[in-house]
Amino acid sequence: MQTADLSGGEHEQSPKPLSASLELLGQVLQDSKASLSALKLLSVCKDIASNLEQENTDLHRQLGDTRLQLTTLRSVCQQQRNDLSAVTKAIAQTVNSENEVTRADVHALLEENKALRELQFPSKHMHSKSNSQD
Image (cartoon, rainbow, N blue to C red):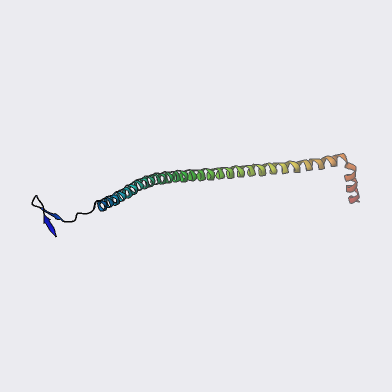
């Protein structure tokens, strides 16, 4: 039921109690605080996500740099292997050549030694020759 207002308007006969309004206002305040906390948390999460994205970008760049360095290092190592192989072959060829010269020198020395023995002990060889002539 409604009663007439002195100003000519109508209003409810039993207005809401003040405590109910305060309770509703308290609930709105709590909801606002929760929303504000959620917004702060969302802002923190966005900052963390931005930092992680920047770190991810930096790590990808560092990975690319590391891959390039590794490729360069592999190339340098391969070149050093090739150089070492060439030096090893050259050393082997030199050693083989020197061995051939040494063998020839040893052979010549053995022949010279044999000739010197024949000169030093001619009677032994002559005796052998004279016995074979008889």
